Length: 161
Image (cartoon, rainbow, N blue to C red; front, side):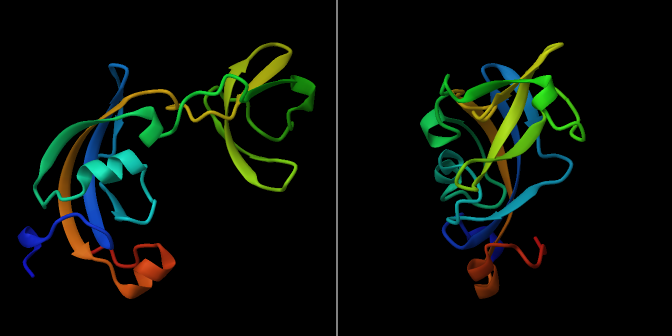
């Protein structure tokens, strides 16, 4: 099958580039390196995956993804404030830095440093894009069927797009 006849659907390796904006603020782009993922395997946010389904190589689209289809809504009680003395001395204190925290059940939870004062550090378990409507400008650069190994392992093994 010719690449131009392929469409984004489950078990396809998708190579694309995008520009991301939220609340009118330009948040970035994946250039110069495009991203690749296996469609239908929860490797990108659900709203993004739904919007690119059916697109072809060379296809471009601008679309919005609502919070419930991206990183959810902000939960105001999902922050903690700790004394700086309780923060590990070997970890940098950089505003916006992502941390991997371990809860009582031993599960890893992502968190971000959102405030640093002289005495305290605020750690937020909300994703920085939680509660935001995301605008994507996407271009599909390549498509191919995923191999059985890629489908089973959830990882692209040959980036030949």
